Amino acid sequence: MIKFALVCEKGHDFESWFSDGASYDKQVRRGLVACSACGSTRVGKAIMAPAVVSRSPAKRPGTEGLAESANAGVPVALIDERHRALRDAMRTLRREIESRTEDVGAKFPDVARAIQAGDGPERAIRGQAKPEEVEALLEEGIGVLPMPYAPDDFN
Image 1 (cartoon, rainbow, N blue to C red):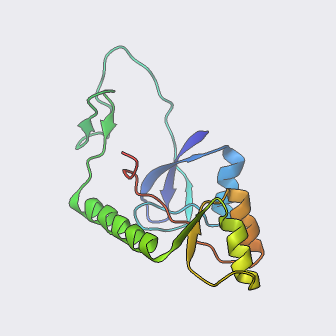
Image 2: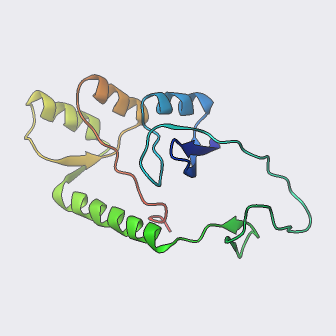
């Protein structure tokens, strides 16, 4: 896995993990990488500084207004009210989707194909699919939409 610092066309900085550089390139070409602040899919790699380990925790330039993490001495961004409201809205939307869809789990690609072909009852479904399965569904003309988690959903 590799983490890239990214920036969107509007100048928002964010980070994302990818299995490798080729995976990043492929996802960006397909418009699957979106800015966490504005949703823009016009993103690119930002300039990254290498991580340097030192014995004394010196304050890095550009970290004004950031709090120190209690366990690592690393600056972390504080969530402002606008971001908190956005995360709450994402959670509300996710709960609404979950209440109106059937979770078919890992069978999602097969069930989606059956519904598309008319071989299964038409209904709203959700589930899990590997990236290559999502790509195949899209190539077959079956519309799917990723349902991202808010960053703190697993905390």
